[in-house]
Length: 291
Image (cartoon, rainbow, N blue to C red):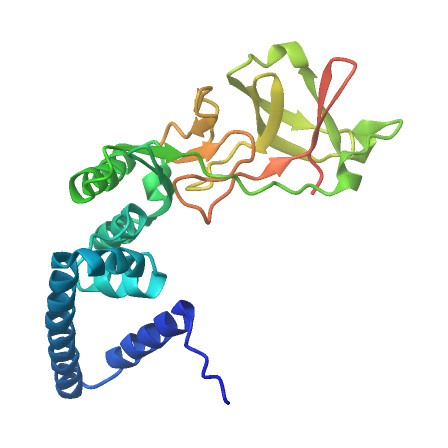
């Protein structure tokens, strides 16, 4: 006897997604007919499902079977699509975010729902939503308002920090030989000159002739060095604001915000401060300025 395998939830969902994608490619007249057919079929299905659910809920013996059926992922998805049962909070929240995502993306931002726990939605914001400017605050408020007002299970929103992309510096560039100044390294002064939770600017010249304008940032006594140029318009960062609590560095000119430890731009993910290799030797900060 041949066993017929039922399609999985993923396979069914893919068929729906593929059909919706194909629908968008139709000419307007054909698309209108297809969408009307879809709406008519959904109306028939919903009417039949509502009748079945009502009768099963009214019967003591059938009610237990109904509750078991609702726990099945495919049945739960079907009833949720027809709004016969409430979707789970995560599904509901993602639907709400779909409505605000175009507005976020029009400003160069986006949002990802990570989880919902004890009434709090934990999200990660990207691009313009994750900066330090007033516009980014407005976008964050838009996300919070949409979730709190649109999802009954959500009473608050917490923004999780993004995981910065690692800044990769070749290992050989970190090695200091017996005469570092001839290898492109420049003396940036005593480590004690760099205030913890702040930054300093330096004009460096190595004996080999290479030179660079740099900023040195200290967060919890961990130093990072970058070329003194904002990735936005190349303006200097000498007076940038260092936020110790958030671990960020904000350009004083146009408010572009960076992860102070990695140089990753939180306002525009495609941008990045240019990191420079940094070593501390006997209390002296050395920065490699050679390309």
